[in-house]
Image 1 (cartoon, rainbow, N blue to C red):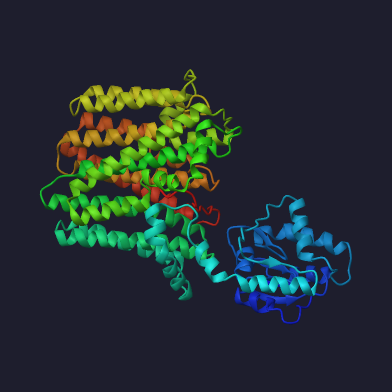
Image 2: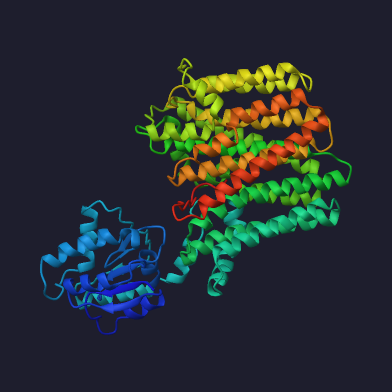
Length: 595
């Protein structure tokens, strides 16, 4: 049980002891700095500890935000500071210095606030939550105490807590059609002891059932699939709101939330394709195309953000215009809807599934996502060309890791002559392999030659650090080349089962690429080098698929694609699960634009 140390007797009429106990703390009372240090030393080393001024006046939710958020080793609000085991040493050092300055009772000034000042001076990375209208203060006299209590009474902290459970930046559909009631579902779950991970799992299961309904190929199945997909999205919003409402953040939960969204959406694509096949319509190419387009959109987002989030002199006229437009409310919503975020996208898919056919659904999805991808990519290219950002070594390494080059390209890059424009090398190689696969007949040796050419240009693209204005485009070009080549060759084989096998392979590889993104976002680095080598890297897999198509018949190629998909899926899943359930995994919580 976490320990809260009150640095003196509470003021008569104060609810601080009861508030701390309601948050799960074992409350101890100290008579001075030395006594506080002794109680701190006695507290279990593997539990959270807090130092709280007994004169504290504020909302319970202000204490909850300041003292119970599991994401931060050290956190504080006025009059209270907390440390998890990882921050315990820093708090102990600060308290030791305070103890050395006097052994009597705590003075009029707040020991907790002095510790906060000392931790700031040490550069300990103290987190201060945004309290907004919530009250957290240490009144200096009875009049100030009465005023603070009146301020507490004037604000409904439960209403604030519910409002803050909703993601700060969300899409139009989510904000106005889901969050107004999903936040109450989140509170209902919290009061019954449900965890965000349980809600996340329920959302996944609901989406898989929806995919199964779509796979029936019947009108009733399609209607049920659309309804269940919307319900799955409601649960998807609820799990994050529950985490924010009850501060139940966890590394495993972050990973589940990040990966299950893609698993749900892509499984639903597969269900639609199976349902269409039952009705005599083969839309597997459209399903795979939708998955490729959506994944490449995300890679554009990830690469651009990684290239620029810590860049210096990171301004441009385009960014300034965007900031001005943000001050005009309606333009914000229009621009959020244009990018077809997950709420709008799933609503469109659900409605079209229930009312039309899988083919129409995929056509609308492809058109919408293509427009969104063009809009966002064009804007980011324009920003990159008009800004004078200086990108860091960390950004260059992140882009190189996202590129996912394997041992072939990596070895060649060490002897290749570096070009000044890595993104142009990646674009050239991607264009050659995709165009050749598209125009050459199935089994052509010309495609194999193009694949060798592609490997060489993959090496050239990474022969120098990716610090150029447009070098963030290198990973998206590689994703489009690898996934697009698999799609084209499977379609050209004209064998039943080839496109579903290609869908499985791209899904497995895409999972690996998403896994790489979230590791980098959590500052944990890319997956281990042995994993990239074991699955060949993007260049090795592309070359392998092209060579298999050149050497095997359509039926044999389908079996080979299936085998490669199974091997890649097993290797990346085992390593990913091992990493994300380990103690060293980072917590990744995305509060930005919905994907």
